[in-house]
Image (cartoon, rainbow, N blue to C red; front, side):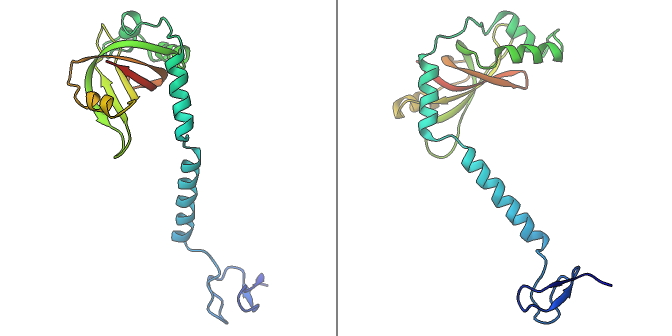
Length: 184
């Protein structure tokens, strides 16, 4: 005997596997596209909720700015370990990453590329050149004002910049530095 359930619309008994009520025509099962839409909306909601507020970002920037930088040098063994022609192994780099994530650094580095993040605001991603003398970085910088933003946008390849920020990880053998400020 087939299992039955009641239609929510007309209370008629309908086979449990039916997609539509034979009495009233009401859809009984949600389609794939509707389920996909719900999942997409849920993911967007989670992303929006988990984004830090501007107050939290400003607080973190102030903390990093006030912090005493570590004595971690952008050159020497760190630069050679993360260089593409390195003698170090992946496990050695992974162990070093665990050791240095969270460190506040203040480095002078050569610019490779500058990109504005978003249409509005004062946030930039600056990629610096990596070689045996300096580790490469991806630095996310928040300009203090429009004047500083103009200076950042005026940077050219090989210009030297002074940055202070927090190492948050490694990407493609480059340090990822967040919550950073630039000093001209």
